[in-house]
Image 1 (cartoon, one colour):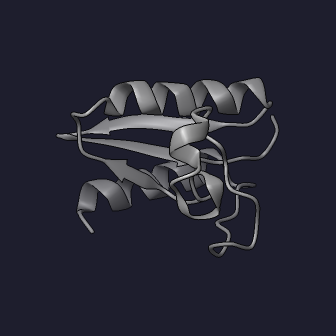
Image 2: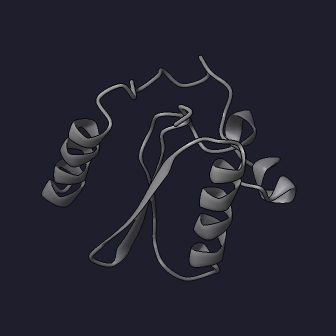
Length: 96
């Protein structure tokens, strides 16, 4: 894991201290608002409370924009950060 990702995790933990990482499959996934793609992912969406790293290309920006918009519509939070040549999404999932 790169130092940039570790720095991002520390920054998000400091900014959202009440957001606790959860073990895979212990909580419902965060749907991205794209049912076809959600159906392909384990547990039906992005893992709640985990950082997801995407390489740009293939519509990554559109997918992450949809995921963030879907989280906001549900009253949840997500952080989307560009780190070098990677897009990083951290769906927090807790209501604001």
